[in-house]
Image (tube, rainbow, N blue to C red):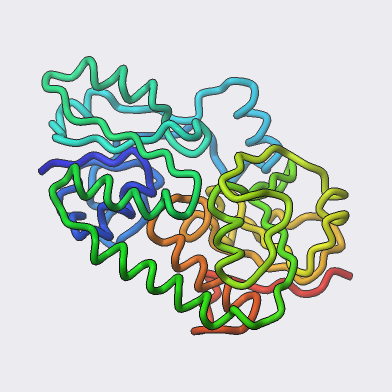
Length: 286
């Protein structure tokens, strides 16, 4: 089985299923598991998140510039049996349209599987969907992930529930939706600014203040924590944490379960202490 993943979350799924050795192609953003750097890269981007500000990146995206390129010739040369992609968000990964156009030009047509989860259950269901296509029984993996979620709920069930505002982009301010409200609820918090499964829109910092959060979570999409630290909002906020968005919150893969465990500690001090790459509490605004 030869697999090309055009979605970092799909790469996470393949690894969780124990099939990482079958990956023959990946995106430039796939950074897990260890050793993935040896897999050929078939995508690229002209947007440099380390030199452009959040506002500049947002402007580039919304004036119609292409975020991602696909090396169709390399994709063809890799001769994949299965291509994993998505049709949920053109900002998060290469568009489904580009993938299907490239596949139509290939010498042999692989199976193209589009993953489009928007809730926590749908994220976990992706393991079954991918497992079925790849011929792997995913039941034990899914059960283990659900057990970890249940354990977090059990440990936080009777604790006070803080009001939590998750932010997945800094300028403009964009609240985190889709599966993130469920992650917060499972970890013992009250999610603000978005409902389960919701595709959100930009808001103002005043709207964040008006929601009266006890805790603000900064988890910009695609930004590792050190990048987020370079662009903290000029706002007086309540208790605020910088989280590893790409690893545990932005991508709809199995590591969202680790995100729930991280939040349980952030909100309640429950479970193992996350390391600084997973969660960092900011000093109070002055």
